Length: 262
Image 1 (cartoon, one colour):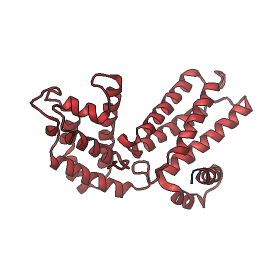
Image 2 (image 1 turned 90 degrees about the vertical axis):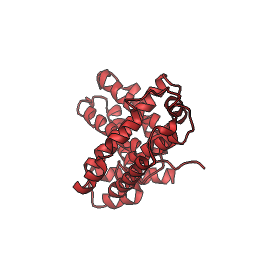
Image 3 (image 1 turned 120 degrees about the horizontal axis):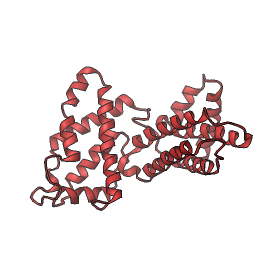
Image 4 (image 1 turned 45 degrees about the vertical axis):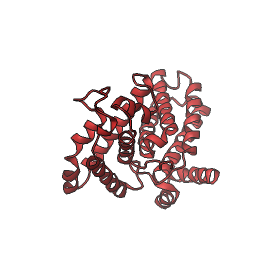
């Protein structure tokens, strides 16, 4: 049976560790390679395993934001979860240590419990998105790549342009691997792209009115698509009803996007 796309970073981490644990592989290297669908020592393996470490880092950060009693309860398992990801004291190619020894059932159970708690506490945010349709966000990403490619150097310095493009390509890569890393990782990366575009907006000269108009429309569309993923159309509409200015423009884009993908 196909597994459900993880909706929090903790759920994504739990599912990956559980799949390695259940892989039946003769060693850690083979187990990780099978689950990440990448050859050991390859750039793909390095990138995908780095994303797993990112899931752990985000899980730790979110647990640190919980009330004190819950934070104390789960933080004691940080070392076990970290060890399961990196295995610092064991050889990954030791045939005497099958993938089944990567982690214990107890460690997985505590991670699953933390994931469920975070999903409940953070529901409707980029850390626990309630949306699942990625098509609008993908379309906006592709539009941005096209816009950035056509952006004159006098409008935006190449270094900043290429940095944003690299972030967007990574976001597209995460969406292509949503079943492995989950929607929370996508939503979090989208917020970073929003911040980068906002920062670049302060230095875009605006001398070319056509480019400036495309930039503004693209920014609003991207915010709408990423917000739809995090909060869902119903919650977003409720929050925006009392809004004004740019927020109203986002509402119009949201309604357009919702109608086109619904």
